[in-house]
Amino acid sequence: QVQLVESGGGLVQAGGSLRLSCAASGSTFSINYMGWYRQGPGKQRELVAGITSGGTNYADSVKGRFTISRDGAKNTVYLQMNSLKPEDTAVYYCNANSYRDEYWGQGTQVTVSS
Image (cartoon, rainbow, N blue to C red; front, side, top):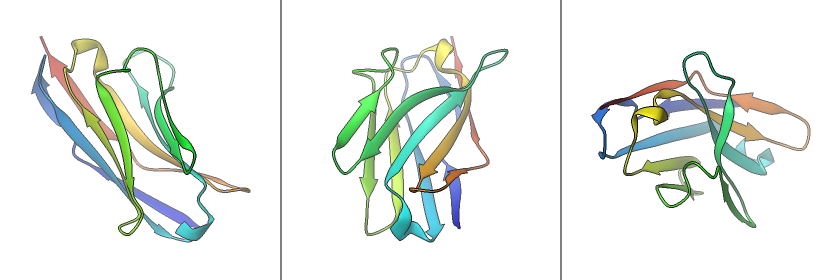
């Protein structure tokens, strides 16, 4: 089992920055992928960014503004969000995958005011 705990959400003005953190615990040796998803009001959950040992991937809407990174020693994944827009407002969820299972954090709210 893997447990994920997100932090770092909050309220920010358009153009501002936030950094989200996701700390993993438990059977972290089994994780081969970690990512961030978001779900805005009235919208479906969507992939924001993901990271593996082979690289990263991003949604087109956040390319050039968001950066995902991972600190293996701390079992933590970060999402640096710059140039935030009101349409980035959503609950952001951390996701981790092993070869057999998928895990989700509880979510952290990001609100961008115009």
